[in-house]
Image (cartoon, rainbow, N blue to C red; front, top):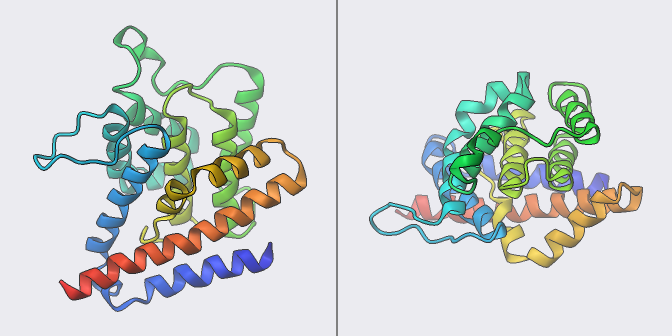
Length: 234
């Protein structure tokens, strides 16, 4: 696992050193964010197509794009009050998925004691309660939120956005240039199999998920490089 963590870090560090990302990173980061949102929507059964006019009708994609736009604004909240940030992510992700009559459920996780306890523990880790390497914390946040399915709608989009926030907050990918979401979209069976292994709570399953996520971060760095390369050629 340590080699996988090291490789993920090195790949993302190299991406940040790309010439296009030295000064032009806001442009490449914006493109990475959109690609991440589209891929995340597909994984939750949505569309990846953004109409030429820009008006998105697919509710999953619309929510995923809203979430992507909020990541920078939510970064400080994520670091200090992770549960508050999660609630906001869910409101944005599921606004078009939850019937109007149930709109008061937006941002509210299931009230059972296990879900509440596990979310509280996860929040403690995110807010500084652990010294594990960034790639490991990113994987744990992602896997735990998928396993909990805490909100009952758009949980995948929320989990992947939380993973992205964690990558930025830990300094693993401070500018949000990598796009591991594309790798997960291209390998959905592997993604779901590894996530299910994590959900068992068994050490081998957790390790399998972490290694898979680290490999996805490497692939995400390659996707980010393709964005940076295109920016240099433009």
